[in-house]
Length: 261
Image 1 (cartoon, rainbow, N blue to C red):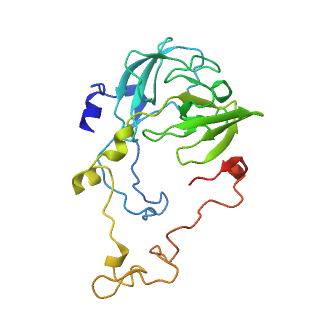
Image 2: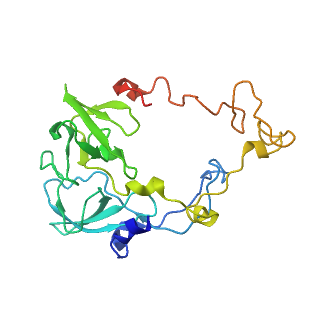
Image 3: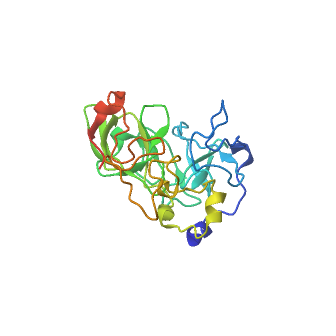
């Protein structure tokens, strides 16, 4: 992982493209109570404003730098457009400083270029995919991930997601060519508890190590099995494994051709 970061540009983030954000760390905005466990603390960081829409169409941009972003697991690229404007985008694997890329409805199939799904050949890897045309990329944004274009017909494009799910999207939605950067992210070893705390991850305690009053798995003499008829439970007594969390009548379910594995 150290070798990967050594290839990044050694520069401060662009001042006009960073903002400071209030860190709530898993707490409710109204009550201040913990609503998401195991989050809190962490190093101070500035948020980079990422251009997920890339709506400067047909204007070439030059890659000025490839930078580390503490708010996400992939790297980011700083673009300098021909008209002088600068923007951050998610960095594609293989994108280098000095490369020229463009966002257009139909353009060259080149890593980092952004174009409509109907103009992307079948079998191409894409990332930062729009779900609704003009809304900006919301799908396939994690380090090392990519979706594959399976078919384009009848006004829709079929994409195979990293999860294995095959989903239909409007063929006028935009997507960026290539795989996302930092594919070795999942292989990194934190080595010590302190690095988890820097990342804002607080300790997780096993339910079986608690008392019965604190967790359904708690209690017993020494090492004890869960001992529940319907399997493991959450601290609030709900089933913890194999439970479907997707709403049955979600509007986008009709666009899923094959469920994820």
